[in-house]
Image (tube, rainbow over the protein chains, first blue to last red):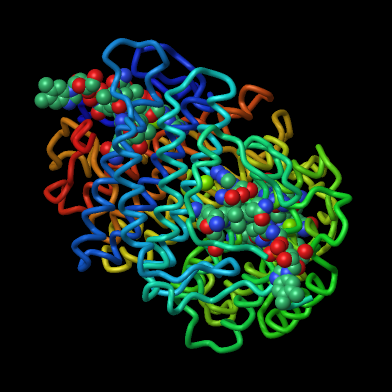
Length: 186
Length: 186
Length: 186
Ligand code: B12
Ligand code: B12
Ligand code: B12
Ligand SMILES: C[C@H]1O[C@@H](n2cnc3c(N)ncnc32)[C@H](O)[C@@H]1O
Ligand SMILES: C[C@H]1O[C@@H](n2cnc3c(N)ncnc32)[C@H](O)[C@@H]1O
Ligand SMILES: C[C@H]1O[C@@H](n2cnc3c(N)ncnc32)[C@H](O)[C@@H]1O
Ligand SMILES: [Mg+2]
Ligand SMILES: [Mg+2]
Ligand SMILES: [Mg+2]
């Protein structure tokens, strides 16, 4: 079990750190970068929740996602082939899809991109959406170099779409979305 | 025309995605990373606007910039040499320079760096400034590997300076700026 | 001495820039990326301070850290071996350790990770924590390629732990921390 008490151990002062199986790697190794970006994504979702505390369903969705992201972090921090590792599973991806479908049902389709912003909650959801995509790029880079659980990639891909639909949901179900006008200021 | 309706297509679940011309590339490819960072920059500007809604001129500037950033995204998502591509043009860079000059006219020069922060609006402008510079690094990395529209690089370089001057403007025209004192706490 | 007056010089429009010793490098060079990420970290700490202005001790700690981060930026922007360079020193790391110990003294140990969030101040401290770790990855990548001052790496490693303990301190000394439950939603 994870134990956090002393917090600073000085063990990583030379730029090396440990994975779940104890192997030592550079802090900028692909695997560490991947779960580091997921950690940042998780913090960004914490910012959305500052604005959605009063919306019980949204808050519950985001709480589940934050917990999932530690499952994802543990997954990424455990090299392929380790017995008994905690892994993201497709049921978590499916849950995201169901939530997307439910939120999207009463939102009109778009014919251009949306300027990110609007309500406070939507603006932070857009930020998290872009950080999810940055995390996805780090996981996709890792997948090129090492074997990973492909459900991890599916999870984070779906999460960025979830956050997009959530942003629209939080902008009055899309009613206050402002659209990109290609080349308007050229 | 862009159409957003189903949102999740599962097409990118294996870490590959499409550019504007339909070519398939990894999600961590330089081009995708570049417009992904620009997307994050756009979201960060959405956070500034949460704090400047009451300032009509600032809000209008930021709205134009957000629209420009989708022109920039389209530009970066379209490989060099594609006919009829939407490209950033120098008139957009010049508009930024004029806005910088106007804002900077009544702000005193500095003899050290500014600690990022101050008013809420200025603090988020500083954040966006640093994200603009991260996006610039991604575009500069792309430019090393592939031909790009050099106006894209000019645009984002100027934008980070615009956001710096905007931050000072939003901190009481620089009056409440706190300066770095080299080595003060050593 | 640093002088900021014209702000935009157009000197970096082709993707090259200068270090403190005048040498020209790409904007995506490891050294530039490292101080660029430190600049973003500094901006993120500016966001925490928006929420902690009323807490005199916390505000003073964060102000010192922001000033240190420009020392760190100057250090990283000055290649190894330059005479009279401003460098981070271990006294700055020790100060962070003392602050961690003081804050951690009355916070209970943890048996799982904390979902990032809680109070506004704590949520932004978690964000800064993850950005500190991103900056650390950039510095660690730089250290692999070039000689650096190893105190720089110690400083940023300790800073992320400081921000973790600060986040708990700001969440009612850990009383309102919500813990990760491994695999809870699978
Ligand atoms: C990977 C990792 C991270 C990653 C990803 C973690 C994730 N899951 O998302 C991230 C980047 C998030 C991270 C962050 C931090 N981490 Co960390 N982290 C680790 C590391 C390497 C592995 C942790 C992990 O996820 N293990 C996988 C899980 C699944 O394993 P587990 O909890 O043991 O659970 C298994 C079993 O125990 C069992 N189990 C679990 N719970 C239960 C419950 C029951 C009832 C049962 C029966 C079984 C059971 O089943 C699980 C499946 O196998 C450990 C070091 C290590 N090797 O353990 C450090 C470690 C825990 N981290 C540490 C620190 C300091 C931190 C940070 C404070 C750093 C910072 N400044 O930001 C933060 C805290 C973040 C937070 N919000 O709380 C320190 C703690 C030092 C200390 N003693 O105080 C450690 C020990 C590293 C070190 N320095 O040596 N970390
Ligand atoms: C690049 C890209 C992005 C980039 C950059 C886009 C930019 N411009 O900044 C970024 C990262 C921002 C992005 C984000 C998203 N995207 Co996207 N994106 C694309 C992609 C590959 C190209 C879009 C583009 O910019 N085209 C360039 C523009 C200029 O072309 P255009 O709009 O067709 O315009 C031309 C003509 O139509 C014409 N035109 C345009 N408007 C008008 C108007 C008039 C009156 C006239 C006469 C002509 C005209 O002139 C233009 C110049 O040539 C498309 C897929 C594809 N190949 O089309 C997906 C695509 C549109 N995206 C998609 C999605 C899901 C998203 C996100 C929701 C993902 C997410 N979870 O974050 C977000 C939404 C962001 C938002 N804020 O709304 C999906 C939509 C799926 C669906 N059917 O619902 C697509 C189809 C990809 C896919 N999965 O297959 N995206
Ligand atoms: C590295 C760097 C950065 C880095 C890191 C800096 C850091 N310290 O963290 C970062 C990324 C933060 C940065 C940001 C910016 N920068 Co800059 N930066 C530089 C650069 C290359 C070096 C600055 C530096 O840190 N020098 C090291 C310090 C220690 O040197 P120093 O101040 O001269 O101090 C030494 C001596 O003077 C002396 N000293 C200093 N103070 C005192 C006081 C006394 C009493 C005494 C006796 C001695 C003394 O001791 C010091 C130790 O050697 C300069 C260009 C250059 N080569 O100078 C541009 C430069 C200053 N930056 C510039 C700009 C525009 C910016 C930004 C506005 C860019 C942007 N849009 O974001 C921001 C502003 C950020 C802010 N918050 O204010 C421009 C200014 C142009 C102008 N004339 O207006 C410059 C000149 C680059 C250029 N374009 O040519 N920058
Ligand atoms: C909507 C568009 O965004 C691009 N795309 C897909 N995944 C990512 C990612 N992780 N980061 C940045 N861009 C991405 C593709 O080009 C897709 O078509
Ligand atoms: C102000 C200083 O910031 C550095 N610089 C210029 N462009 C970038 C960027 N995109 N990211 C980080 N640092 C940059 C150069 O060293 C410049 O002189
Ligand atoms: C708590 C855990 O976080 C990982 N770790 C250590 N430093 C970093 C960093 N800069 N970025 C991401 N992850 C890091 C290590 O695996 C450590 O054990
Ligand atoms: Mg996707
Ligand atoms: Mg510049
Ligand atoms: Mg550490």
